[in-house]
Length: 609
Image (cartoon, rainbow, N blue to C red; front, side, top):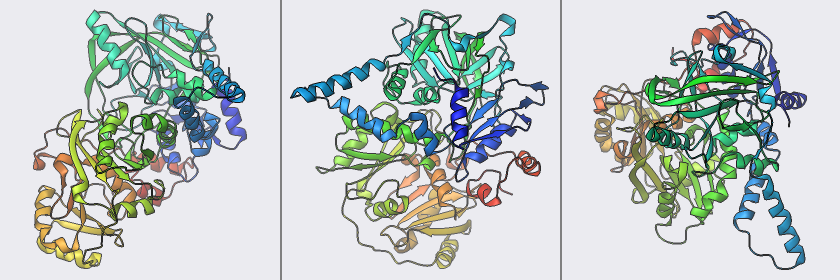
C-alpha cells in the first residue's frame, strides 16, 4: 500500500509538484489557479496547503491536491508504463492462441499468471481510509474543502469523487466518476447520467422500492480515478483495470455502514444512501465542454458516515475550456482502449481525440480501407459501441495519411480529400452534456470519409480583405473574416457576424461567391476571435448539430453560432465557462499567479472586454 502522501513526495522530488502555502479560498481562488496552471507550457501538480472558506470562516486541516495528471510525463509515471505498452499487453491477451513448443508454453503460463492480479481482492479488516470515523451529527461535509469552481455554479462540487455502487442483487459493482453537488452538510447531488451503470443500478433500486447504498472515495492511488472514467463495458468492475495496469490486485475493504467495498488506501470515504423517490435540482455547473450545463433533477445522497486516514489529502480537478488535466487522462484512455475498439473495427489502425474536440465532439481515425464504403461501415460501428456512441463528429483517413497528432499535416490531408458525397449525416444518441441538439440525449452526427484520392484545387482565391468586402456587400452584418489552409483544395473560411438572423440566411446569400468559397463556418460575435483557430475548433464542434447546422451545396457550410429563438431553438443555450476577472486580477496583484494577457486571450479564460 502506497499512500497518496507518499506518491506526492516522489513527484515533488522529480520537480513536478508545486506547493502553494498562501491561505486561499476554496470559493473560486484555488480552482482558478489550477485552471491557469493547466494551460501553461509545462503545467505542474499543485498542492494547496492552507485552504480556507472565507464566507464560512473555516480553516481546513487537509490540503487540496489539483492537477494530479499534470502533463504527459506525470501521467506516464502514474501508470508506471507508457499507455501504448499497456495497450500492447491487452492486444496480446485478445489475440492469444494455443502455444506451440515448450518455450512458448512457458511464456503463456507467465502471461496467464499475470491475470491473477486483475480481480480486486477483498480484505477482512479495516483500511487506512478508516483510521478516523465520523458518524451521525459529526459526519459533516463541511469537514471537506469542497470547491466552488465557477461563479455561476449551483454550489460547491466534489469533482474527483470515485463513486462506488453495486447492483440490487449485489452481483455487479461499479466505479464511476461523476460530479457531486454539495447541498448542505449532509447531502450531495449525484450527477450520474442516464447512460451510466450507476444510473442503471439506481433504476433497479427504484423498481424494488429500496434505498441504494453509495460510497464515494477521494484520493489514494491516482490510478483509481482514471479507472473511474474509463469506458468499460456494462457489468465489468473498473478496478479490474487497476490490477491489469499495476500488475497487483486492488485491495478493498468494506465500508463502515454498507456492503460496498472501496480501496483501503484512499484518503476520504463518504458513505450514504439514496432514496430513489427523492430528486433535487442539480447544477448549473461549468463542465468539461467549456459550457455550463443546466439545472436538472438528480438523485440525492444522504450522508451517514465520513472516514479518513490520519493525514487526508482532498483531491479535486477543474473542468472547463481546454486544455486541462482531462487532456492527459483522455490520452491514456485513448491509447489503452485502441485494441478493444479494434475488436469491433479490425481495420482501424489508430484513432485520436484532439483536446479541443473535448473527446466526444471530435475523433480522427486512420483505417485500412478494403472496399467501397468501408469508412462508413466503421462510422456506424463507432456509433454503436459503448461510450464511442456519444461521438458527434468522426473523420476517417487511410493508412497513407500523416500522424493523427500532426495537426497541420493531417488537416491539409483531410481538406485535400473532402467530397460532399462522402459526408454522412445521421442521427443518434449524444452525451447528456451536449447543448447543441434540438432535444436532449439525441442529435445529429457527422462522418467524413477522407480516404479517397486527393482532389484537384478548383477555387479562385482572394485576399481576406477583398473577400470580406465582397461578403459585406451581400450581408452588412458580417464583421470579420479569416481564411485558413488556403494551399489546400478546400480552404476554410471563418465568417463572424452580428447575429440577428439565422446563419442559413447568410449562407444562401453567399452562394453568389461560390467560386471563392469551399468550406465556410459561421460564428457570432460573442467570445469568438477569427484569428484563434484552437478555440474556433472548440466552438464549432461544440455548437453544431449536423442535421440542422451543416449544408452541403453549393459549398460546405457550418453554422457554429449560438442558437436562440432566431433559429427556432427552444432549449436554453448555455453560457461559456470563464474565470471571474476580479479574482484573476487579485491573484495577480498578490503575486500568486503569473499569467500573460496572451494566455488569457488564447484560451478565452476571462470574458471579453
